[in-house]
Image (cartoon, rainbow, N blue to C red):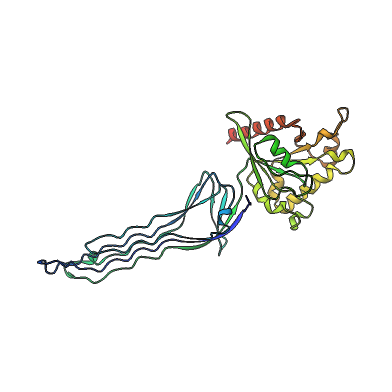
Length: 339
């Protein structure tokens, strides 16, 4: 399924039905009087979260949404039928902007799952409403009011507890495959991952968390190079970032310190808040080293000034992955307890 995280749509609420101009006309009942009924209300348009969705692909081809108009009133004081409301389902984490003013209208999550985005028109009044002691045969009616029309811009920020960051081919897709049931494409070339991937990591029957893998980030991403930066919005909501670094280069070419500095620079260039987000370093591909070889974590800390957690894993073999996921789960549980 193609991943779509931005969309523009138009929504039109239904108009209210017109009031009816009618007089009672029956044999042997002269001057029956006004009996025009009111119209029905127009349908409103709502946006509602559907937990089964994780993309805005439904809006790729269908971009105009119209609720039905209310029925007009009828004689014999019959009221027109009100139109049903139109509900548009979106993925959790969808931001709703006014396309003209760029004003943020709503942030639709599980805690805020439904929003009235366009109010339907109010019904018109039939002439029976205007009967009085001084006006026994009113010919006055009102039209229903027009429904709201809006141009909207939808932007999706996936809801994940943990975000995976790293250069292309750092092993993020292999890691999410190892620790969850997600099955992204994995190949030995850069930019295999072309869209964000969500995976649920189950620690036990009561503890789980959601991890998001975004396409690899390269130097210059903040200026538009590569793919990863356009998806960085999806890690803005995460509570914890896992910075995956390929350490297999220590056997030949490559330097984890340079890789670390590249991602750190691009995060700061994109949004300063991401640098302040809690981040753990994950050294991946330790399976390429012999048992008697040692990865010098202290040297990495000295050269980078990094004082946070560092985990050594092999996403391919699973070595160290359980320790990592258990630590992440414990950290998330501690955060929820503090809240």
